[in-house]
Length: 184
Ligand code: HEM
Ligand code: HEM
Image 1: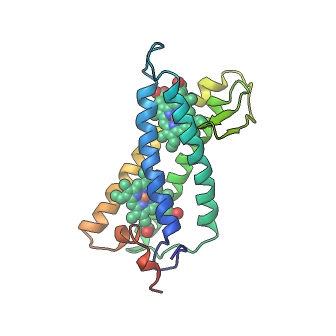
Image 2: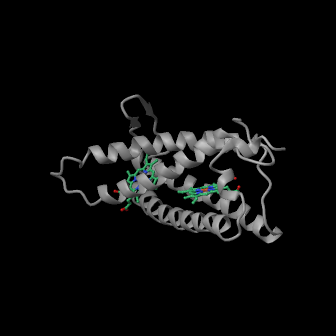
């Protein structure tokens, strides 16, 4: 039930998909809100700390998700050959945009050489730092890759809803329950 099969997603992929989707939407809203806070606001330091901490957990989860993805079978795509290729391409673009947001966020936060404190539990060290305008350049990449990620995710969600309501396919329910992974 944890593993994927050619007919459905296992619980591990399902949990990682929905927890990541929630985290991404939450981080986008938090990031947007926190960059407008004034210096005297009670959340001025706390909100970026929460954003960085949750973001680093998402980065670790995403690396785990990609490793899991690469050593697991993936369910057969439904629909025409064109749709199958478009879905595959779309999914890899989502992963690419996600990694772009996560890595650029890490590079903004470690630009001056200090590590990232994750909820006071552990610290992720700085590895690449000290480049001219590193925080500004990484900040611009962070913003545009976050916008791209959200736009791709919106298109992706619309496609999933269309397959569910319009084409009456199992695409969405397969991502909600692992019971389809049992049918070979
Ligand atoms: C999918 C994950 C993430 C999303 C969707 C996201 C989204 C955002 C957004 C929308 C902003 C506001 C940008 C602006 O107004 O210019 C922001 C700012 C920021 N994010 Fe993220 N973020 C994510 C992950 C991370 C990670 C992993 C880190 C670092 C560990 C991080 C660090 C920062 C920092 C330091 C800022 C403030 C940048 C500035 O003031 O220019 N973010 N983020
Ligand atoms: C930020 C939000 C989201 C991101 C980043 C995201 C990302 C992804 C990725 C990368 C995959 C491919 C999995 C793989 O091949 O490893 C996937 C699959 C899927 N997602 Fe999302 N997703 C998001 C939100 C949603 C939402 C809101 C829905 C539904 C309304 C949805 C429905 C699906 C479905 C049904 C699949 C399985 C597609 C198939 O079996 O071919 N996703 N998602």
